[in-house]
Structures are given as C-alpha cells and as structure tokens.
Image (cartoon, rainbow, N blue to C red; front, side, top):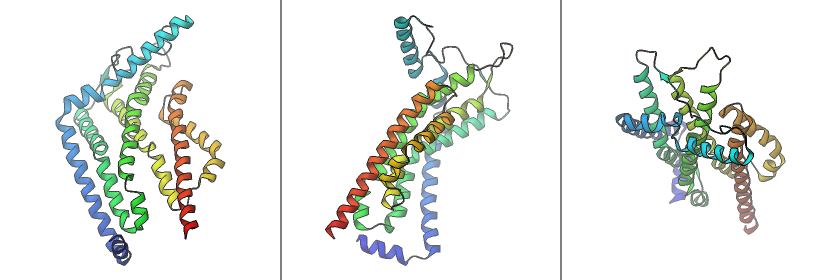
Length: 281
C-alpha cells in the first residue's frame, strides 16, 4: 500500500502537488478559524485569566519568584525584593478607537493557531507522507504527537517564564523618575503573544533536527563539532527573547541547551539506524 502511494506521489505533476498542498492549507486554515471562533467567544477567560494574568502579583510564576526572593534574602540577608517580579500594579490603557476590538481579533488568531497546531502539523505530515518509503513512514508515526507536545511545552515555557520576566523588566525600566510607564494595550499583548508563540516554535528544534538528519543534511558529528558555536547562537536567541539581564538569559538559555543536546541524541540515533540498515543490506 505504501509503495502504491509512493508511486502515485511520483506520478503527480508539479501542479498536482500544488493542488494537494492547497487542500492541506485550506483544511488547516479552517481548523484555525474554528479554534479562533472558540477563543473569540471566551473573551473573559482568555483576557482576564490568561493574557492579563502574567502582570499580576498573584500569577503562579510571580508568586514563585517572590517566595524564592524571600528565601534567599532570609539566608543571605540581602534585598528582600532581589528576585521578586511584577509585584507593583501595572496600568494598561487603550488609546485607539478600535484598539480593544483589534486586540481581541489578534489574540483570537494567535490562540487559534496554538490550539490548531496539532492538526496543522498532522496536515503537514499527510502532505509529505506519500514521498516517504514504508520504513520511513513507520519511523515517523509518532512525529505528529511529539511535535505537538514539544510545541505546547514551548508555549507553556514562554507563557509562564519568558512573558512574566519580559513584562517585569520592560514595564519597570525607566530612564528618569519623572517619566512614568503607562503601557498600551497592543504593546502589552504583542509582548505576551510573541514570546509565547516564538517559544513554541523554538521548541520544535528536536523535530527539525530529526528531519534534517533523515535527509542527511545534519549529522551528530557536525552538531558536536559546532556545539560551541551553537551555544553562542542560543545565548543570542535567549537575549532576543528575554529582557536584557543576565539572570533571565541564563534561565531561558538553559532549556534551549537541553533541547540542543536532545537534538544531538536524536541525530545520533538516526545515524545508527541508517548504518544498521546499510550493514544488513
């Protein structure tokens, strides 16, 4: 069956492939729109319990940092607020006529993309599946599941860690005591959604390495050779995603390093299986 599908895929013309891709994209867009409507209709929960929550002192991450700050200050007898974040009220204003409505649409779109991501990944896998050999199809059976899990872990990481740190630093930073910060609604939402969604995409690194290893572009020896260079890139990436302070960068860079090492392990596993297949032929 897989051979017949592969043969049929090879018989397709370029325009046939475009037609197939179009329908995969159409179904993906429909899924995003459906989830977008769900997010749009749950406005109170989405904004009050999710989007606006990271700026409040009772947010899970903010409470953990406050407790950690009290613990460290009690031991070292230092500033009691050394690690406390988002403890002061943050005022957010809307200064545009359609600002709140457009913010609602934007958050609904991002939420729709996040919730529909497993189906989008599934449609992508269905598009490339006919071009795979039978053993490759068997080897990638769980790829949709693991890619979805990695994406959601990244989203949670961005939401619970990067977003609160970014909000605290950017909202409390000032160049003069005479200049106060009143944050625009779109600016706040842009910060929360961008770091959250970006973290989800970045956590797909192991799956990207799996694909590149399967096609022979990436090997474990290459990844080990350029490990130091990769760590520098990860530090730069952490600096882009987080506020410009060392503590936040290290906090974000650490799981990225773990992801890289996991990618090395995945690449090594792919190479071992390839060599095993070659040796048995």
